[in-house]
Image (tube, rainbow over all chains, first blue to last red; front, side, top):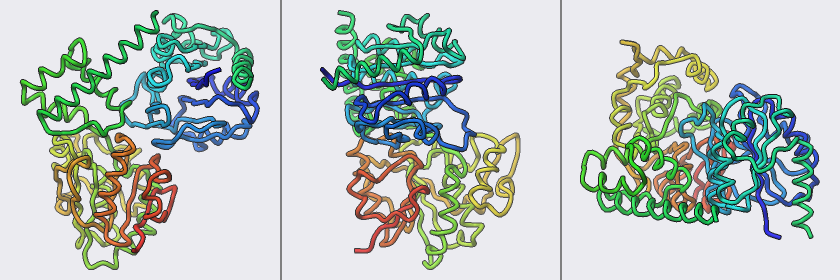
Length: 191
Length: 281
């Protein structure tokens, strides 16, 4: 069973589903997870610290050229774009915003698709803008698995709906179903 | 089937990028192969959109046949942004922990490597003025990008001073009012001439040029994030060779020396502020 990398993007209303997903994962969960969450720049506590309290895995805010290490959840720093630079490293940029967002989900997903191809699992959650829909489609085009939070389970349905309208979604699932799917992949890798 | 097509398209796109890089090297002499792949690719794709051409390879004839395109392309591929007192925590630590030591030198050289439109150099001049060290200090601000250098030399801010600038200045330990250091006319703000006189702006390419000066302090923030790991290490070698013994290096908030061979040559003075000191030999 080959390795998979998980990429998650979310905006308004995505913290609750992210916590649902992360809190369900065991400490030996074997798929490296990378998160881009849009957040206001005025939040004082870094997102990584908020998530770390609810997650058995190591949660790490990404610095430039950080290595992708197992059993880690990587979180994009506020006000930086995150790219998958190659199979081993991330890279950062402060180039202009995409869909009014930095970090932008589209840039993470697209770079992940180009580096990891069909070994990507990308998940797009609740949000109130269209970031992520194009990147998710790129993941699908490269043969990766694309999952969108069901609009009815999303606090803000614009982002998931944009991806569905863009024909980027292979599966449309609730947060709990997303957790279950990730655990199934983890079991597959471990067997 | 569809997936194979996508992989093939990606292969061709990467080939086009390599050809464009070769064309840039052949025409202008700049070797951009040491830039981080993901971000330079994004900038090239933006150039394709802005130039209204079909594909990356279409940029090559324009580049080869038009000297105007040559400088224009290179400037658009290497443009970085900045702001006054970016990463205030670092400026505060610089003020409290580093400048008292630099005050012991009769005169000081400070190198701002990758100065973009000048804000970092302006911030440094303001800070030095406030602690009474500006007079015997030369600030050398360099960038690869001729267009931003032209802007930086004027001392005019690209964006008018705003509340966020003032807040960062205060968080940096500023003791006056930021607007005191700028004159205002036609909705633009210009750094006071007596501060600007302490900054020299020059062209320098961190990827290919040698050490720029011997400095007590080098600041290079959010520049190396655009380089690949090898090129980062080359730039760090350059900085290490340019620093006097016990000189200081300041890097960007989300940059890291942890995995670099320089970690052992430099001592972290303040890790969150990203301030390091060259160890004695």
